[in-house]
Amino acid sequence: MALIQNPILRGFNPDPSIIRVGDDYYIATSTFEWFPGVQIHHSKDLIHWQLIGHPLTRASQLNMIGNPDSGGVWAPCLSYSNGIFYLVYTDVKSHMGQYKDTHNYVVTATSIEGPWSEPVYLNSSGFDPSLYHDEDGSKWLVNLKWDHRKGKNPFGGIIIQQYDEQQQNLVGDIHLIYDGTELGLTEGPHIYKHEGYYYLLVAEGGTRYGHAETVARSRTLLGKYETDPNGPLLTSRYAPDHPLQRAGHASLVQTQNGSWYIAHLCGRPVTAEGHCILGRETAIQCVEWTEEGWLRLSHGEQTPALEVEAPELPGWQTADSKHFLDHFTEQDWSVHWSSLREPITEAWASKSARPGWLRLYGRESLYSQHRQSLIARRQQAFHIEAETKLDYAPDSYQQMAGLIYYYNTKNYYYLFVSWDEQKGKCLGIISSDRGVYDEPLSETIALPEGETYLKAVVLRDKLQFYYSLDGEQWQQVGNALDASIISDEHAELVKDGIMLDQGFTGAFIGLCAQDLGGTRKQADFDYFKYEERD
Image (cartoon, rainbow, N blue to C red; front, side, top):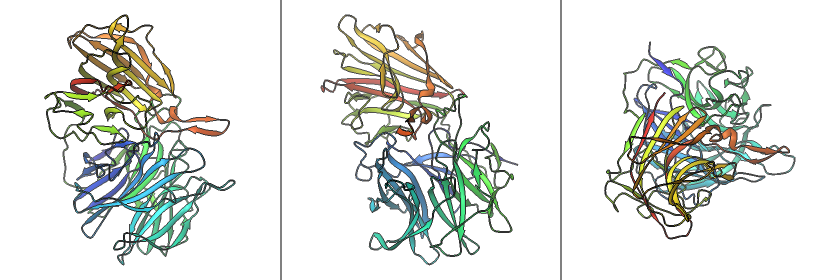
């Protein structure tokens, strides 16, 4: 019997939307402020998954310049009907405070690999949009409606409205179909039809440790919907020691042989305080229908299983993603690279200016929500090593380049090369903890001219930086740093009961360059190596 090992999509891969098209399974996950938008993973057997691309690859589809941390793409929904793939998604322009500026769009393609269309605007009434294709051919947009008014439940219920594909807009009345349960924070809706009932799956309880997945049903599409009297289909809120926490935000799929599964998000804490440096990941569970017509996890509990029986499908192997080495010799960018808020272009990240090297032109600071020269990839294991070789000749302390361990503009560690009036070229560490700037070393390290090798080793909640002048003899830079600040849990800041900041992403490791004087000083990187040691 083959087993699925959870999580199936490790590292920052939240809000999974799973579908099957023929013998192929696809999962779309949120990317927030990282570009390109939406990750698509492919599988044949539900065990092995491979990242195959991103639908939102053009600024015309997703312009996130100025978007806040953890803004951008929330909770995409992938669907398929009559030979066409549909992807609906939210581009979040603001999410802190009383208001949410959440613009919902749909793009389409005849192949999962694209090209994907220009976006069609749908609405801005809330977030987590989902497109339901009914049996009569009609299409319906379902989303959370946000209520900003004082004294109201801001999670104002799940609404539905018809989408006219010919007119490319929403038409007809807006219907409130579900108010949620006492768990509150009702979001992430998906509708499915099974044996005469419309089933509504919603995330509840918030995407932290109270997260859950609730099921409701109705004989008619426009409801209202009756909640499963058994309580949540899935949650870890009552099992604080379970390895998979934050379980919820699920979507449903049926296999070729008739079995049913849900994909859902989860988090794996690495500290006693519950910090999940890998962010929210994707797991999968086998589910069954009861005689009364409700969904249950097949192993008979509400908590997620670490191992799940796989369906009887042909075996399938994927490329190794645990060892990643980029010498920057290929014209196309690896699918694993991401940038902040905008596409990678030759204007600031060139592989042609110096063949065999990546040239980053220094731009704005690490606090910027506009134009950073930064490329990075997800951390997808608790124990990793990342390494690069940097050729850089700064002549001002306003010029920096190096290796970045990054959560958002307020939480990161940076092993950087810069310039000092007394030492000349030098090496240092910058940390930002909830926006508080620091330089952990007592003094910077003087460097000779020429190339410098940089390395980061992360082991669960500890980060250690190293440098070398020859790539063989490595010297430790400072003491081990607290990697747990690179997490949703640490990014969240509440004071006097008021949410001042929050985050929904995960740890990234990569390369960056800044020139705060505006001269675009260049930094050349020979390679980037990422290895998982788990």
